Image 1 (tube, rainbow, N blue to C red):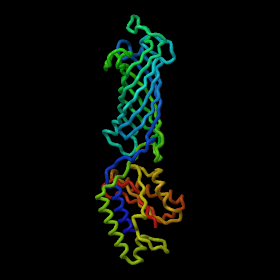
Image 2 (tube, rainbow, N blue to C red):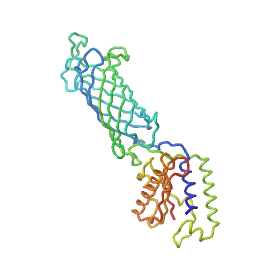
Image 3 (cartoon, rainbow, N blue to C red):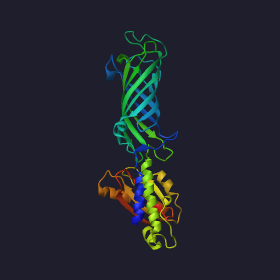
Length: 358
C-alpha cells in the first residue's frame, strides 16, 4: 500500500502542477435569460419622484469567460413623464447590445464557482422608439407629448447580484443605470448630455442554462505543465520498475490484489476524479470518468485536498472525497477494497480522488 500511495502521490502532483484555467466552452454553453423591471426618470428638469416611468424588460446573454460577456436587452416603458401622455399602451421601447464585465471575478479571480455576491459593470449602445400618435413640439410650454421618434441610446450601469441555489443557476440583481438619448429625439447631434439622460433603477432575475458538462457555470480545468509531467512520469516509471523487481509475495502485499491476480500498478490503471474547492460531491464529469470502471472490479481509492485549509479540515475533505467515490462505485457494482483520505499531497492544488483499478 505504501508503494501504491507513493505512485498515486506522484500522479496527483502531475495532475495539479499547473495554473488554473476554465474548461473549454461549447457554442451553447454559459447562456442565460432573465427578466427585469423598475422605474426610470428624466435626469434633469423636473422632480424625480413625480416623473417615474415604470418599465419591464427581457435580457438574453452569454458569458464568454468568467469576466466578459455580451447581452441583448429590450425594455418597454409604460409612461412618458414629464411629457404629456401619448395615449398608447407602450410609450417607448429601448433595445440595447450590452457588454458585461464581472468586476468581482476580474479583481478577485474565479475560484471554480460563482461567489454568493458579485458586482458587474455594463455598457452598451441601443435604439429607442417612442409610440406617439402625433408629432408635437416637445419644447412647447406646457410640455406636450413626444410623438413618434427614433434615437440612438447608450446604457451604463452596475449589477449588484446574488447567485442562488445549490448549483448557482439562479441570480437576482439590483441595477442602477443611466440611459442617454445620444441624439435627443433623433434629429440632434450625438453626445453624452445629462439633459438627454434618464436615471433608472431596476431589479431582475436570471436563469443560467445547463452547460454541456452538466454544470450551470464555468469550471476549473487542470492544466498540466509538461516539464513537471515529464519528471513525474519518470518517477512513476521508476516505481513501476521497482515493483517489478520485488518477489510476487511483496507485490501482493503492496497492491493487495485479489488472490488469483498478479497485476502491476500502472498509470493506465488509475482513474482521476477532480472536485471543486472545498467540495466532496461528484460532478457529472467525474461520474462519467468513474463509469469507465466495470462492475465486479476491485479498486482502492485515495482522496486528497488542496493546501488552503487546516490539516484537520483537509483530512476531512479528502476522506469525504474518497467516500463519495466509493459510494458511487459501489452503486455500480464495483468492489471497493479501501477508501482512504490522505489530506494534502504537495504544495499545489490537488483536489482529487485517485482510483486504482486492480
